[in-house]
Image 1 (cartoon, helix red, strand yellow):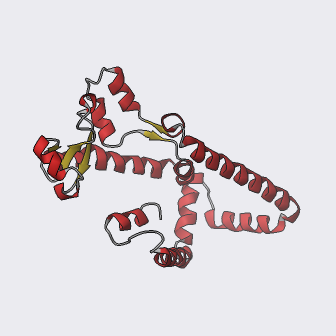
Image 2: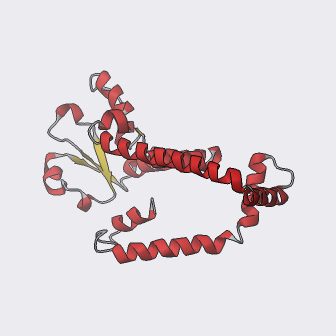
Image 3: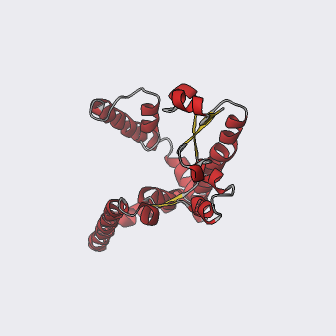
Length: 219
């Protein structure tokens, strides 16, 4: 849902969330059914995989023992459930307030454009903006921070490695060999003349006609 739905919109397979409400609900139901259908055959693999992470000697009996213990922990289970609900509620309120307040302090509470700072501190005369052009900045998104805590270090490093491969190696190579093109974000602003955005097709850029004549677009 995080990456697939936006990809469908970018591929023009969906129009607007309002018009596609039925499709989005259907995709959600199909995704939920898909998860339930594969939960049973993947149970053994999941238990064994987690067992390696936790260095468990008997993974399946340990899982059964924990399940039985949680079923019989009626008295303490209620108190623990209340604590979990409080923690979840506090986290939700914090994330909601952060998202609303960050709209008024984007560069402080949400996005940290570190390489743009270096570019400005260097009197707009260094290569730090090249990293900013490819989207290398820190975004304090509670959803993804929580996802990083859940998936573990191996998956997080895999995400990071994929980002480096896509936006640090493949992307620049596509531009170098003219498979993709770049155009100036602010052609009238001299200090930000090296601030570029990238497209796979010149016809998709909003500055195709006027920018091509002024030299703002570079293949």
